[in-house]
Length: 363
Length: 274
Ligand SMILES: Nc1ncnc2c1ncn2[C@@H]1O[C@H](COP(=O)(O)OP(=O)(O)OP(=O)(O)O)[C@@H](O)[C@H]1O
Ligand SMILES: [Mg+2]
Image (tube, rainbow over all chains, first blue to last red; front, side):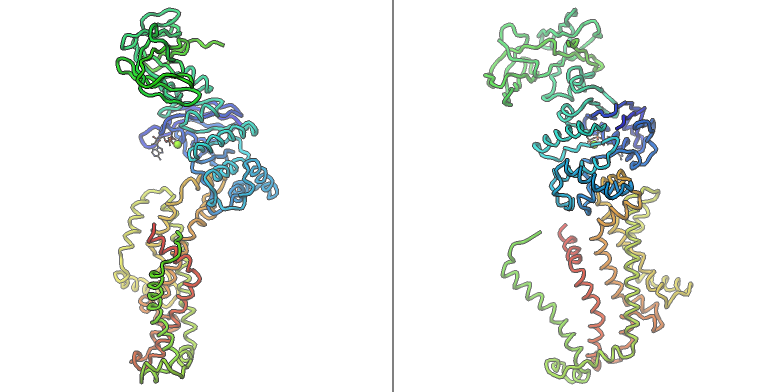
């Protein structure tokens, strides 16, 4: 088990800089998720750590060792690929043993490790099958088992769940979490699925255009997004973003929407820069309320019943669409005109640079 | 792909076609067991006794035939092995290695596909004369080793293997050669089989180049050797003998087909159905 240090690493393809002087420290035993939209450089960064891409600048250390000039096989890492990348002509057992043989692990030790990993992932009955004779889910488990037998210092997983169906994805997600708890090995997991990131990560690294947007625990990221990009990328349904002007500042900041409506936020006014702002409201902090006295009035367009909660897709008088949330047994119906109440302590403000300002977090 | 029961009409048509294909082969086989004189009188004599092994006895009589079969085997197997090795290495190189001039070189290889043997045969003959190589196995094998089709086929085949697999092996601590040898090459076996059969058969059947290069009877391949034993008027006066020669020359192809049927069918079906 080792920590990982990325120190100002860069990657260029020709004139295009894909990763730009990125620095990050990952503690030993941590489960870190790289989260970001397609093309932001998640895979590239992971592959640089694995040694599958060269590093154009900076340093990578795993444990105390500088690894950026070492061959992939010498870095003590194991990787699970999105398409599994099993060796098609080898049996499951041979797939798992291949790396150990290359490392000259004694045969009886190989047998023992393969058996243990196969047992843990419940693929014992598949050991003598060809990897082409497995279902997608089974191939996935073999790919994970093949990584485990190597007992690496660091696991790298590049969107390992994206080819599984929804049910299997949830189950495998849970298993990966359990695996991490059991092995305690440092893991880096790449995904563009924020639910995966939220459920698995000790810390999430949100990437955007080759740089780090924010690093923090899932709840940090969710409750205090550093930028508007993070706020809109994390959370489903998406956060509502509304242009506002600051009306009155004090203990609470009072803002005015384009349509004149006044909303109170618990953001401390002291550290707000001047100028136009964007108000960020997650759907769960906008609730239906009695029309009189509610700060916002809106017409309901679509009612999306999810069982334990109900999403209300509404439009304000000036046509701005908003998503609000109600309890599972909501009586609201499409076409209704309703009032909306906002929880001030869950409102976010983003300044012109996209930087977030949040209400002080209470213990 | 699997089909259900073949439709009776289709089955009948297939059987008829198969019989039509086989009639000439049986005709050749039957004629080869008849005396030349009997056939000269009337080819219908093939339907009646007596049959004889005389033609085969003549064929094997001077012992040269064994020498020629040996030569053909050495040339065909040598060429097949050489083509497989070179095409695999070149294919891997084109598919996986980044080197300056790669695409230009690949285009040059493809241009090789467009050059007919006839166009270069005189130059080739002179070249080998210059180094005094005629009447050696080298002269018979070496020209066949420039196999643009093989290089092209293997390049495409290696390209179709996802790079993830190389990378997984790299992370498993395998060297470049080990990845080629243990991981990628086994995946190309169907292509190797196709290319191998193709090369072997065309080398075995080749007549023109061995005819030009090998002037010494000891270095004849089977095709050239058999032709050299034909007398004048073979079509009329030596029909039985001629047919025995044809049987002998065709036998190895039959054997290759029987052994590699699966791969030949795959290759043909692959070309049609992909
Ligand atoms: N070999 C290459 N040559 C040029 N550009 C490349 C190459 N590989 C990747 N890129 C570029 O680098 C950027 C980052 O790619 P990367 O694969 O890391 O994205 P990603 O975050 O993993 O995206 P996804 O979620 O779609 O997998 C992309 O803009 C991509 O176009
Ligand atoms: Mg990716």
